[in-house]
Amino acid sequence: MFRILRRRARADREFRDVQRAGQALLQMNTEMPWPDAPCPVAATAQDATEAAPDSEFLPPDFRAPSRQDVVGFMMPWDQPLVIDGEVRECPECGAYRHWVVLCMRDDSVWLRCRAGHTTRELGLDAAWYNRHSGPADQWHPTLEDGLRHLGR
Image 1 (cartoon, one colour):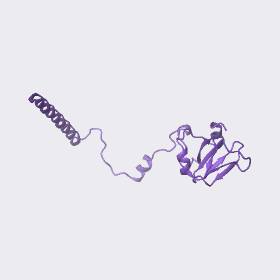
Image 2 (cartoon, one colour):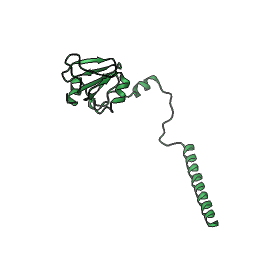
Image 3 (tube, helix red, strand yellow):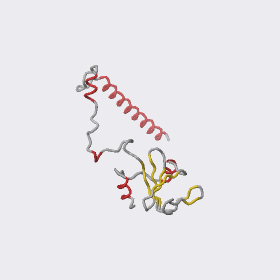
Image 4 (cartoon, helix red, strand yellow):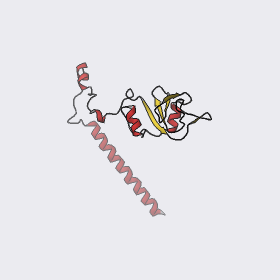
């Protein structure tokens, strides 16, 4: 039993010694000036404009779209869409499945049937879209490119 206590005391003592050495090293580095550190100089307005990052440093293919560029999100909805107990169908052609659900920036939801008819759905909102959609997997510059990606 005493051997276990002595081992534990020795391990605690070694741990405290390592902690003290590490703190002494940190203290020495914070007190010592860095040789390559620039001297603090008051910044002028001209320096601030020169230091502003160039917003066009990436080619257009590598830039993430900003919030202003994103018009909306889309997802396929192949099964019949039931809202408030009613199956929604296209008012022009009567289709009731194979929708593309579009969620626009103004939180409106639009339905597009296979025939290309688009109608606004007042019974759905952006919260419904977020609950039923997965993560956005690709960005498309136009609606046609997005529809082509979904196979529509």
